[in-house]
Length: 430
Picture 1 (tube, one colour):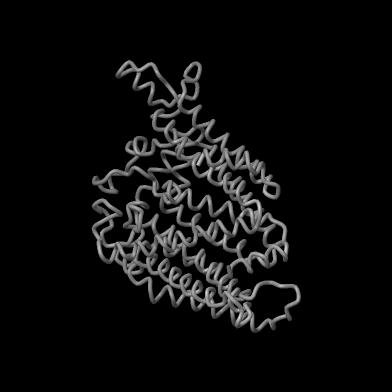
Picture 2 (tube, one colour):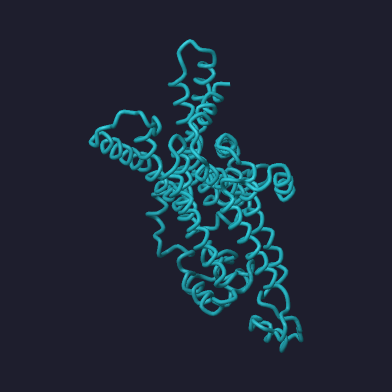
């Protein structure tokens, strides 16, 4: 990815329309990686060093002292943080036009659909196999190419939203294609293939049995699907105004459809929620201990990648003595504990920039406005699930989401051009 970023920068240069976002993200990448490096080195006069190093010096004669309690793990985590950032920056370099951005989203959607089909076949025929190795966890759940069902659910939820968008685009192209013209049958075939891949993503999502993943997708669908139904034919300038009652009817129908769909097909996840209440979930039991750890190290953090070591001192015996918590099951709290006050500042900056980008996209884009809403809904999905799981900490999903986000940000900041949009729609028939 780093090599691709360098090549893209040399070939395309700095992106024009998304230059501001590119600069902010690059600055944020430098700040975060720089701070993580500072956490690993020995500062003069043991300044800001973690108190654990004093104990290590007294007991074992260790002379080293740093902010991180495990400098090697924190140093290794720099790459895990840099990878999604560099992926996003590379995406902005490549998606310098609406057509390229939509091509990237088309490829990501089809990839998600193919992975969903693979997951369904694997779960049906070889439920105890994970790609090519033996599966040891979540034997009752579809995880596709992931180990954890929650990460799989986040990926499949995003894939479902993407494939829904592709089905909408190809269906509109087919309906606008003149009968008898070459390419109409090809469009029909592609419409059916896209629809089947959409069904595969949705089915795989339901079989993941992830309560949080399905609920987050449900919230995102309530944002995206009603809007898509109301504006199915696109927002064109010369369309006749639609009566308000008809728009309200479409809105209510879309909401009812999403609720009914969830009720009908999310039975296994709902059953899991009923069998194991929130207060009985270990991930919620350990929250007070995480907050105590954060309160003790809120300024400098303990070093990213050190949660497993640090949390053991704050673990409540009432949560049980079995198992090892190597992750906080909360992206925000683990980031706060690892990086200190730098993390919430960075998170607020990221969400503020995304809010500004989506607001601009909703105000300026016409034909491609549904991609802006798609980006908003997907961000809500990922942000909600990150509060109870660690999907964003898995490199495979982090890279996929970063590539997706770069394309929707590029579209949101792009200038509306009817001729370019129509040219892309005509290219769907080729």
